[in-house]
Image (tube, rainbow, N blue to C red; front, top):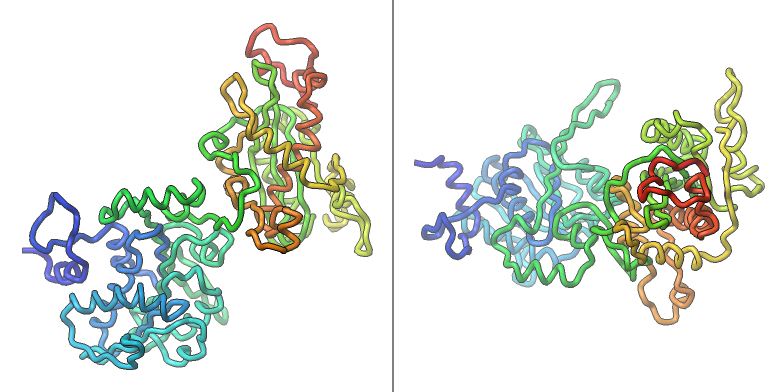
Length: 507
């Protein structure tokens, strides 16, 4: 005989619709692994981040129902951005669960045939609200809340709800829940729940450490056996590889809003695990306080005498002055490129846009400041620089650089390797190449469409600028036949087809 509580919970799920299911019995049901993990979670704040149709909302409303019937007088609220969305999806799923449960209830606040308050026999209540006007529902104290499709909401909403999550009778079981398709990885949700699993955050309150528990559960559309292959194929047909990874696999990513700047970029072809060689390594910078960016590059010639280019590392800062950001870049170089540094400090070269070398009313630009010698001992490190040697150029028009990068992405080499490859750890740069760095949506008559320049989003565009800078500062000048010997350290063709691997010398 099965566990009565488990059987009662299982009864809240819809009957299985899979033909020829191995567990086939009349009205038998299944709980998906992600749904079981959600129901078993004991953390106060739980996020279910998943692909389309992965079963997120069903698990969340069942949790809300269980909290309401288990704690008499509990108060819960289910929210979505607009009432039509709330009615057509989340509330509909909840009412189906309520019907399967057999619980007696009173429906109140009827509008357009939909109840906006459910009252259970034990005195528990559940309200249904749109979030466009939070002032209308932030008065009561709650024992639990659920925000469906939370990526549509500002972070301020969850902060205010957490301030109301304090119903005394539910004190030991307070629960804040969100469900959403994966937002971009710069979204507030990605910062609050950065990775799957449990996380404890320690907050100091009047000198006392308070622990808050979080759990992120990632779900994939592919894990829901109740969805047809045709449904998934339809999503794949209408989206790029990177978008499919977000909306099907449940990974944080970007939402493509216009044509990608590099439509020929291919995740399978241009992303891999290229090795870091002991050879000239280039750091290319894009300065700015809000989102400074830096990428690390190397070049080599293959047996076909073709110049290849690999992007090995990235760093995207946030609200950092140039000196602090340069400290991070230096530390990454010491860690990930230690063998290169041991072979010779002159093997690391730096580059950027000439804008960073300009003087203004606020003083010299970051290229000038970082090129200064290191501050003497006893002095504030920020008064000195890092002794860097920059190569920089003024880029009046970005189009030539974009075209050169496109050529690298589109060309094939007889050796079998792509001309340009990105190490898979350069995740944000790869997302930018895959479509995060894009043109604006077509809006007839808009000046940015007439000019057709990539969107400056302050995120993907900064890292993408470093790729363009490197191409024009270093790759293009060394890619012609005349400069072959510079890379090989000799103007002689290697006797052995793979001698180039042993004969690389610094630029």
